[in-house]
Length: 145
Length: 77
Image (cartoon, rainbow over the protein chains, first blue to last red):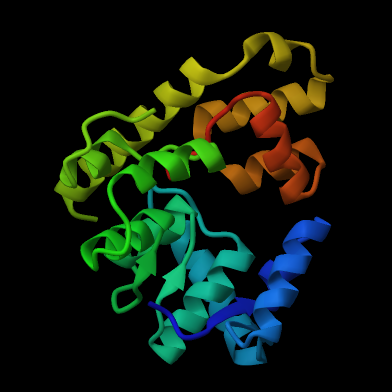
């Protein structure tokens, strides 16, 4: 679905566990992931996005997510984020940015016939993340875990 | 912000809060030091991972592990 996943330095700097570092290093070695070094323009734009987010009655955006949104906007690439504020921003004040949560990634895999619906349940069990009833009902899965 | 989208977001938030409250291990949470307990309860009520992590004084990864120990599911809203 994606050729390369760019990982911003702000997000990378939050990773501490050895298993996650190993996973990132392995994917970088296979050219599936790449580190995205933030430019001064992106940093400034990220701060503007953070300020903008505080004007609305939804979760505000923190710097690491704002950087990803800025990169997504500047390069026209999909932003992958589990942050609800970042997800909502594309419908409110960041028109033109596409944000996908794990839910949208799984949905696209399902639409392409690469996974079946049970993967939505498995993902929730393995990650301790809950999808909303509304999202699950939209694809014909009535119950959350 | 469009009224309809605002209503949908509110619905998402309410559902998320309800799920977090229901599934949380309150015995575990109540045994934690005050700062950690406050951060966990903040997360349950608001669903704001980054703010809750800052309140806890832990790294993001450490806080996510703590959420798992407290059986608090992560939600989008």
